[in-house]
Length: 116
Length: 114
Figure 1: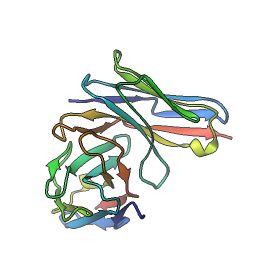
Figure 2: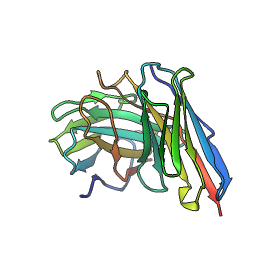
Figure 3: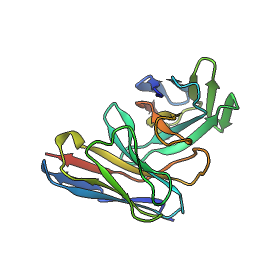
Figure 4: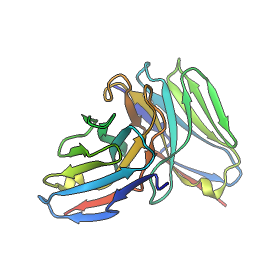
């Protein structure tokens, strides 16, 4: 079944610097890779996702890259701001649950702290 | 739109007690999910419902039951709570059919079992 590893578990950056979070997955059949942001006391919220037919996707200060050969994908946040401080989760599809559609397996999360 | 709502927000139970966590969505989504979140463990799928009238086990279903009451509501029941079920529980919904897509999460229920 799918296994998703996420690194680092904690990341501290200075405001304005870039932050990179990396994930690896094990199931070569996975074709959907979302990233969620969870603020303290709230539920996760999708910030960006990528499907396996593209290698990179950008949305303002956030970008995700996907390397299907190496089975890893990364979240890049540029010009970080204090409001980017949160826990970030990557995920990939597992065919173990969900029949033909599959369901998401999440990484263990990265706590990002942006210092003013 | 309220999105995904969950009740209660907090709950303390004694070992062996039962309770039902409620979840409702107003986005007319077909699929609904229950996850648990433990420190350092990420989110793990307990049960899901791909469409009204169907439910299936996820990664960690033991000790739980679910009911898809109608298209809007999906409840999670603990019949005999154990301390190992102390966790934060999230309900989510997704409207995509045919391929997996964005899941919308509720605010969570923080459950403590003594």
